[in-house]
Length: 104
Image 1 (spheres, rainbow, N blue to C red):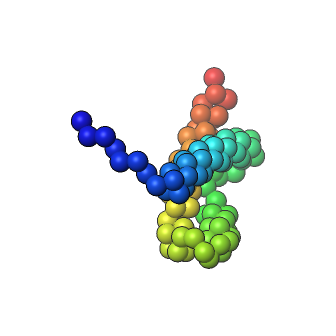
Image 2: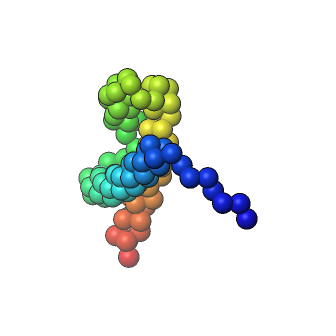
Image 3: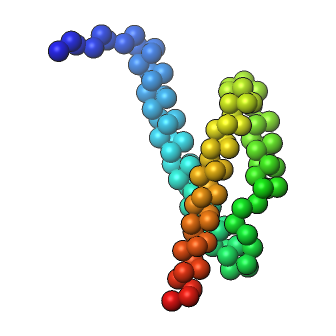
């Protein structure tokens, strides 16, 4: 078995920073998911549809406009669209679960 070569100090530090950010992103995405569930439950109580395409467009426009120095807008948009797709699925599932609990 070959031994991994030792990383330069700056690369190792940057990788630790990346690992930390990945952990932060995961926590934020999960916090967002919990909020999606709460919103879906509130919307279900008010007989509102779970998806809101106009709201998603507004959030996407805001998110993509935030920082021009990182990902290109097209890539950032793709990332947020993936998050929104997963959020829609979660919201619909949550609303469905809430509805089935209410009928019991």
